[in-house]
Length: 133
Image 1: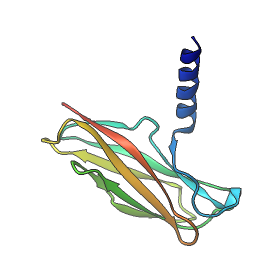
Image 2: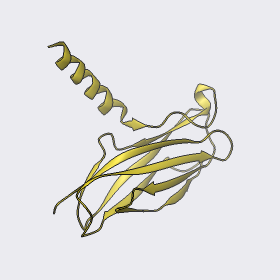
Image 3: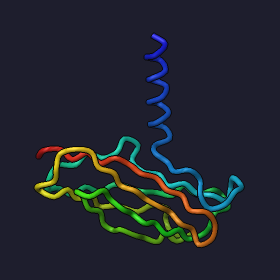
């Protein structure tokens, strides 16, 4: 019974927080940012393209531009592979993930690194599961 409660609590926390990177940017709480990706990864059929949202969660004092570099595992592709999110822009972007018609069924990863104009970079990764059509 206790293990069920712990599992439910852990899943609830994951849904609430999603997948986020460690904080980058600055050292004080309001000076940093995190990269947020889909909380449970993404499922995509062979031969299809799917859009996912990647967003920055900025501290209240973080106003710098951030360059995102996106790198998928071999076997899937992403567009764009890099993007600038300006400090004055909406802090999210759409990422297009494509699985080739002959992509192997299985798990892949997408790695995202965020580098601000000044300050420390941060990174996050999320899973992409390719399934049969």
